Length: 465
Image (cartoon, rainbow, N blue to C red; front, side, top):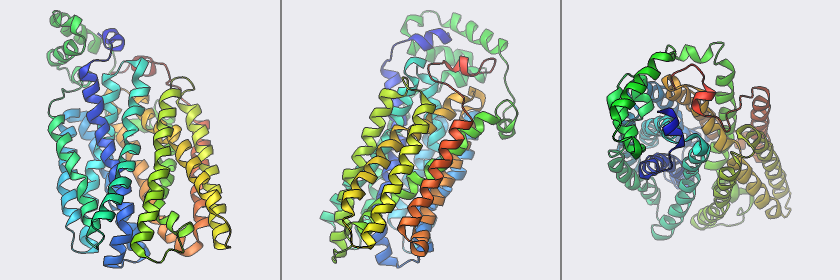
């Protein structure tokens, strides 16, 4: 049974599961970037303090902390598909309400609740894709799905440019925040057509249903459903089902894996969200500071950010090419080093701009290096590792736990950037974020568990997978 799942070629169902999972990550990227474009307009309408500005940006990410943890637990207990639909319902409802917010606090509240959908989708997406895909392409398919975050960020930038050009007034930010609801409704409808994960069904003893799905994945087995049922039952009987619980993640067996899954992703999202959401703001301050027209300044910075975001996609393409050749951990270490270097270049550019220097020659290379190496390395690999390091009985919970830690890092980055910028300046702020990237590098090097080229059975011997 497992051999058949591992060796089958990719079919329509594989691609459907992959694409609909990827679109959840797309919505996260879109929402992440569009709030960065909308923030200057929101600031102009509501005049929030730096503290409130950080809270507006971080509100959806903060709620993702609970969304990831609770969503992972519910996904392991009640199935991948049920949560696959609930999370998008949250995104749609509170995305619409965010667009009609009447005050700073209402906006923060609705963005906070929207984040539940974002947080839940990460462990579901990773679990679905990893459990459906053959091991020979699992890494590529996981990264391919996660690369839609960059597609979403680029789409958010382009949507911001279009809205600013067509609706130049103060209401433009409302249209920006509401646009993400359109693809979310379409994806929600299409997600009703995908089946439950057969690995999860086997872990829960639902062998007949698992057999039907396996037969649809491997058509050669469609006349052997009863044999699949017997094989699944024997397989479940002969392997050890570990007691589910978050305490298990800190046990001697899984502690090293938990540290590798959690800490680098936390460090990476400090930089990814902190820099990503404020890319237009940083560009405007460093490069377009002489522009006096507020809308033109925001538009110029957004166009610049859209250009730079293309390197996020290039980074993901490089990761897809290299992830099974160089391995997850090598790319993660290389990526963290490149992020720290890119942030250091940006810090020098910011200091040069303050002294009247030609900072543009450093800003572009700095952002390119940061975006390219981030997505070639840890922004991709930290998403893969929690889905591979743990067995089926705790995969979504472990991934949700790592997601929550990552979103905590993201919220910290988003919240601290405007506060640090106003207190210690942009150069010192960028160096502070670079230190987080270096910490991620150190932990990755110290807690290595290799998963490249291995099946889920080989990574987790003796456990329900």
